[in-house]
Image (cartoon, rainbow, N blue to C red; front, side):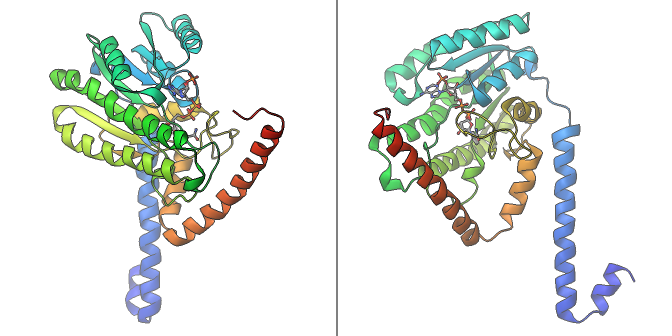
Length: 321
Ligand SMILES: NC(=O)c1ccc[n+]([C@@H]2O[C@H](COP(=O)([O-])OP(=O)(O)OC[C@H]3O[C@@H](n4cnc5c(N)ncnc54)[C@H](OP(=O)(O)O)[C@@H]3O)[C@@H](O)[C@H]2O)c1
């Protein structure tokens, strides 16, 4: 008997449940097909056509460094921005050794002190560059999950400045040039934590949600003018910030960016480029928020306990900064 005939002839409750099951299975199948195509088969854009330069913030480590290397490999000249000059020079040298025919500049900027003067200084250094791609990657999370009232004031301010101000102002610096040239791609690295209720990482999750909403609206405002703004929202990636080792569900930065680059320049607005994250995200969206929040709260309480114990040990050794 076909499923349609089974549904029409079965008792209403059984028919309803079967139809629901089929719908869920179908939507999962469609999601897998479209994700497979977008992740593995759809050709990446020729990003050089958007402009000579790619600007990457937080470019000396983790996802930012992998983006800088990946964009250089695609033939773009790179502006590396980070706070530690020695590391910037090392990455510049690494790129220049590996890829010829491109230019690499570096700008020292501490985004935790991104006041008007620092903004003006940085903006001046971008004048005259034909920026085709901006990767707003720099960001910071809690050292470990905590209740919001437990965070020191400077950490609260830092989280806002690094995760939000950097994205807003960098976007403003490059947009006029992109509008004039009618092309450009802005990539904002948010986080999977923006997509769910995330107790004990409230401010990080809130700041990354800002990045997501900001990206959605900027994309809608400018895509008809040839400019895309895409929010990439990974779960864990094996970097210093995440303090996680590479595993099946935790890609290393190069693996993540290898897939992430294929999405740049497409108008898909909020994406999870690493396919395992996309599947995880699909499943999590189907779990009731209260259950997910309860689960995450308990997981974070356990990590908080370890973090507090580590801080106590460091304090007793006089090593806590
Ligand atoms: N890793 C993950 O699991 C994960 C998951 C979701 C989202 N994200 C997001 O991905 C982005 C990159 O994270 P990541 O894991 O790649 O981090 P990471 O490995 O710790 O690298 C951070 C980069 O940012 C720079 N940086 C740090 N503080 C800075 C400051 N005050 N001013 C200027 N530059 C600064 C660092 O440069 P210095 O070497 O000079 O310090 C480094 O280049 C962040 O926005 C993060 O929220 C990460």
